[in-house]
Image (tube, rainbow, N blue to C red; front, side, top):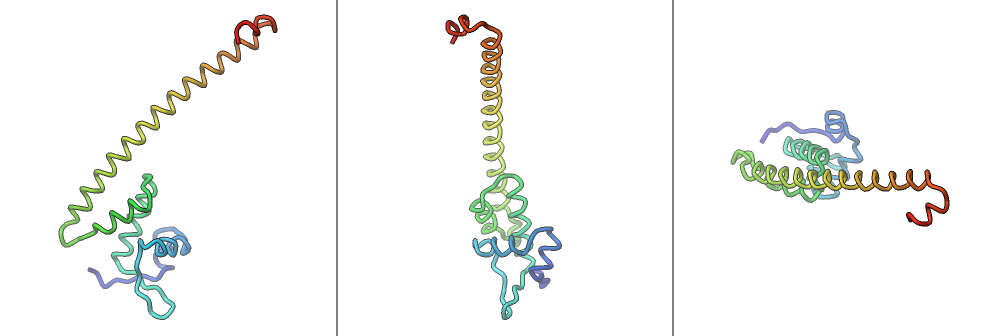
Length: 133
């Protein structure tokens, strides 16, 4: 573990996030900085955790999933368990996105059908509309 430490403003600036977001992740138990009086001192591990949270958010992971991955962080073992779990979660997320894409495509077909029926109904006389609806 590196002896390098960061203040909350250092991390916010370096990772382009707000100090409020960092405090939120701390409240959620995702970061555990040391305290020196009122000052928070973040470790290199906290920085890695924060990067993992931000990456996880970008790809749609929940905070609970991010927390699970953070808890598996173990550089001494090469992070194999963490990486295997991460790959499993990526596969699950990919499958979820593929299903959502299929759902969206089906909805587009249904919208196209509804729109076409509206066009047909608008082109008919009122008497024809009574029969077709």
